[in-house]
Amino acid sequence: MYRKHFGLTRHPFAKDLVPEDLFVSAASKELETRLHHLLDLRGIGLVTGEVGSGKTTVCRKVATSLHSGLFRVFYVPLSTGNVMDLYKTIAWELGLPTERSRAALYRAIRGEVTRLNLEAKIRPILVVDEAQHLRSDVLEDLRLLTNYEMDSQNRLCLLLVGQGELRRRLSMAVHEALSQRIVVRHHFVGLDRTELPLYLAHLLRLAGTELPLFEPAALEAVFQATSGLPRKVNLLAHHALLAAAVVKAKTVTAEHVQIAMPEVT
Image 1 (cartoon, helix red, strand yellow):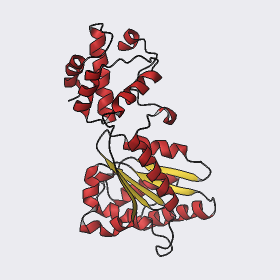
Image 2 (tube, rainbow, N blue to C red):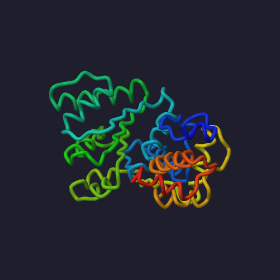
Image 3 (cartoon, helix red, strand yellow):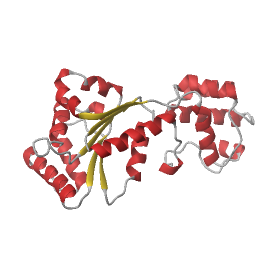
Image 4 (spheres, rainbow, N blue to C red):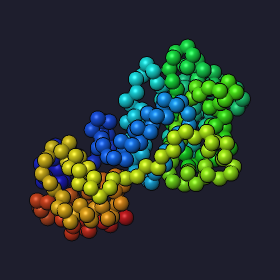
């Protein structure tokens, strides 16, 4: 409804933005730098952040920017099962037949990782998202999966992505061995107060308008309500634009943001 009212050519808060169109914040630039450092080290990385902070989006952007002839990314979105369940998922991603035993799956995965490294000259990268849900025994097996040549070589780059709870779990004594192997740790945060206006202006520009549709007081209200988390910002801004369009207002005010608040809380 508000697209026509504000003269927009597309939905400004769509989830299908191409990586080139993503807003570059200070936090996202830092995370991209750390991820590229992890790829150079070929070790284990840990990226955490609040729900809706955009951590997975930045990881996806880095993954899609990699040369397909040099890197291959295998993405596991969620695993709440046992070690066999995880191994089967990884095997499917690698294009391997599903073995019936845990040992056979382990050997098959390691064999394919070795083949990619030594024969195809491709660096495999395993990304496990929502990793805060992984069971403790699964986390331990992921660590073992990265050991090659008696721990003298890093052939598999492993990136664990999850919520802040994952940091706390990995600090426990039971995960000391895995924690010591982590070479890159980063907690991703959302937009800061000064970036929020730039973020919304960027998305509105992509949607076809250069007009400052959000008044300063509305911007502050959005930030206060969302703490700068992009997913919440998108949802609240969407409903605030809708509230403004209903009364045929030319800009979004703090009152429109307040009207939209029940839609996102």
